[in-house]
Image 1 (cartoon, chains in turn blue, purple):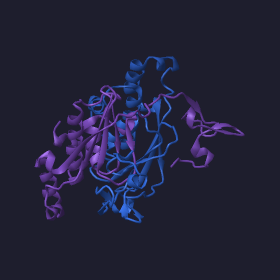
Image 2: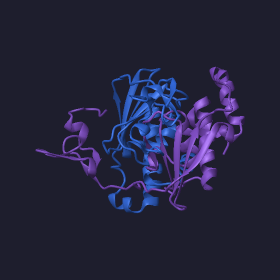
Image 3: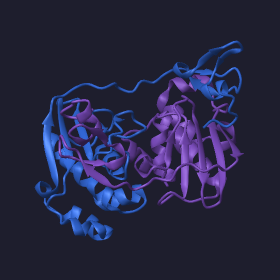
Length: 175
Length: 175
């Protein structure tokens, strides 16, 4: 897994992506696991910044697979769990080995994050395993108003039948 | 952009991923745009299923870049916007050109989704452009309890100083 592959996915290089890459590799090594093809691994991330794209790419815990859980805490912390090994590890970026003044120079900071020893920038702590919900495939129904297909668990009962949330809010183009 | 690249990112092939791939390509073509290195594009997705991984990979609208917005409507609908062109397009999967019975055979269904003509499975509708929030880089502070770095906008005022959300909830390992 090369950082350049992750840059290609994210679209550009930045310190946050480099931090996410190092955190994700540290978590994988900490658990002694390989990338998650399905839901063998799941991750809880405490921010939704650039680094999470590295986590998605490195660990296979992705938004679309249902094994990426988001706690909006604004912290550079990921907790990665292995369903197979029933283990968890919490990785945090402290960056103490990198001079504060270097952080102003984003390319230099990113490069240093990639080169620095793990112990100098990251803490890795084992945490008790706990299960989180596995993604489910749901049946679909058809909205009585817009006629579009809708996951049954997201349909609402209305006078004119079962409808989707945006139609219930009378939005033509949802969002 | 090959489907096999997206399968590698997602971890496996499935009908949902194929649908997301076709929807994402249709949206990009509909807008006449290329992949988003930064936030030139942003997407509003109406589900968090497999297909969104294809959208992340194809459009560059990713969870970590702040240009992926999630409306939990349970619909196979994406709306893609171009900040450069100030255009929007809403793509929905109707799949009317694919026999219902074929859907039971997941590999055959996925293959058919990849091969079928766009008009037979997808509707593409232009929508008015509207701006959504651009991601911001926030300063960080240090939690007075755990000593970890926290995005300033996510810190809470407490008797013992500014603290992070998990410490305010007295969680040792957040989440």
